[in-house]
Image (cartoon, rainbow, N blue to C red; front, side):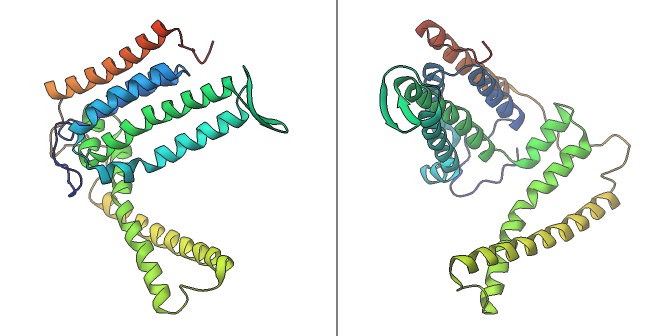
Length: 265
């Protein structure tokens, strides 16, 4: 593996696993939790995932920074469900047509736990995976079209450049005296103009990259060769087995507790 580690993402057992195995494990958990809306299965899955987090090699700072959108999404989903979800049981709070009942509150908790149980492992597993290794695995093991995989890899590699371009545009505008002031209206206008400038830069860079890749034969019809061989090892099979075990334990716990609620029933 050629994972490019940052100071906050250390070499670890999970970081060394083939990204395709991580993807398969995350999909097994996600598909299982999508089938039901209950707090038992999501809570059990989240607890088991928390046990494995220390083996990911992600520092506490990076964990909270990278998973912050997941926590925000979980909170937003819980609030929306509590206010507008199906009412059942006693009414705990009400304001006109908006009510919070025991049933909607329980559903909100289940939704929040499910968002966390699905989102957190996906974010952490992706953070500990090298994009090139993931592309190698998707093309060689999953046999996805090479042109699609390489195009997606090239696009992903440009994300860092887009961030640098955004910062450079801001510094350039401030150096010219048009980067500050104007109040909220001015801030919205500056955001629009910077976004348009970034779009222009992105189109130019994408066009140049496409031409360069075409010139190097990336779009040719001949079968591709790969600089590195992607293969499954016992470590990768163990990772998939862990994902299946978490899904199985979560499902079994929900069924035994009588909380399993199949979404299509």
